[in-house]
Amino acid sequence: MVKFYENSFTYDFSFPAVSLAYFLRYPNPYAKHVLSTDVIDRQFDPDTQRLSTTRLHLKRSKIPPAILKIMPKGFLGSTKDAGQSWILEKSVVDVREGWMETESRNLEWTGVLSVIEKQSYRRTEESASKGIGSDLVEHSKDETTEVTSTFTVLSRFGQAKLRGTRQKTDRGGSKSGINEEDDLPPKKGFFSSWSTSSLQRTIEAVGLRRTREALAKSKDGMNVVLERLRQGGLVGVLDGMRHDRDTAFVREGPWKRVWQQGIEPEDGAEPQYHNEILPDE
Image (tube, rainbow, N blue to C red; front, side):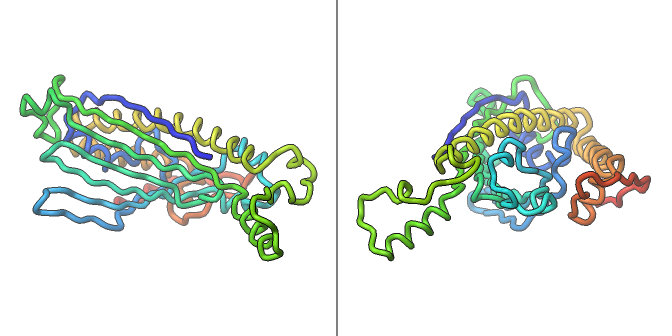
């Protein structure tokens, strides 16, 4: 089972500004769940003038309650284990030709739900024909950048167990063409009315809904960064990032500890607020 979702929109900013904002988008007021971002590889090709970057994002991202309800008890371990997730992001940007391709995917709980996001940023033909869009900061109403986002949502929940059962059955001499799933022992309790495919469809539907919501917040966050870039240049963006970081990790005491130690507060624990200011990066 797999679900797809595609969305297209336009930023009223030049492609150089949008591509720069993409790499400076965390933190922002709509992405307080992003705890850290690390560049693990960056290469520049002098022949093609293209920049390739690989980054890791650590995000506070719990499994949606709707999915937890249909998971076997203890399947995800402790709530501490399910409180964070790593996102792998790869990008290639060509400022000269005016395009950028990105791909992001989750590295945690891929057996439950895997989400792959691909985005294509393109300088519009109008901007290219006018020869504009060469400045990273200056903004013109005539400069726009088109973005197409494509999401692939896939759940493999239950497949590993089913493959193991089939392998055991095959070793026992089962005949081909027989539906091994029909030969499995009857399920008990809540799962008696659910098949593996039904669970996968439910998980994918919840994941797709969350993906649409996240895309809307992502666009809002990018617009905040772009406005900061237009009004205050790079200094304005960096000041805004510092403010958002302090708001997320100083005023919200528990998440400051998450950022510093990578440990989520236990459920029900009394928040401990701190007045210290985080050191500059």
